Length: 202
Image (cartoon, rainbow, N blue to C red; front, side, top):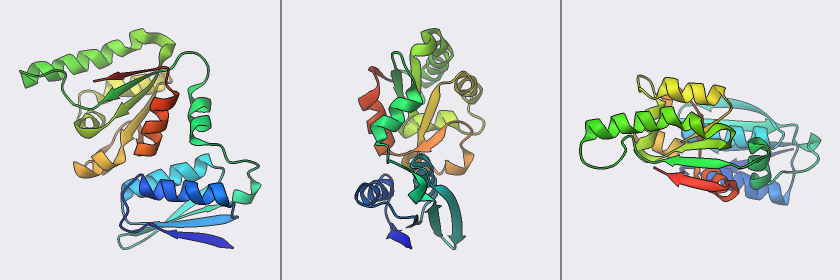
């Protein structure tokens, strides 16, 4: 029997939180989550995959039906903290939170150049650099034609996790232009901050 959750009209992370709460109480063989925005579709899909489900998505008009099956095969639900810890591996974990597409205040051109140089230099942190999280106007660094995309793709290829706020992408109408990183929600961001050994805010 499929358990259905109606999340129409809800922005992330509300749909993910509803699914998480349901899975903590019961473990259906299948679950269908109905959402009406791309960020929620992507975040719910990723969350269900992390919980051991096989995911399919059907679109009807402006609605998405995200269905996870095979949930009864998973032995135990991992908490978000456990998932993040496993993804992070061992050793010290530094999280860099990027909430802007410029560094500092004053001259915007200088601020853009400084931030690009900052991102280029991040690799000097070595294996301790664990995750980059982009929020607000910081998400503009992760989309088509952004100067930072190639730098971020190199970091991702080196094993750095990159999360990009889905609500922010939606706000700037950039969700379909994202070129690097995983679309994420506030639950993932808060959990990441909780597990990181240190957080650097830009």
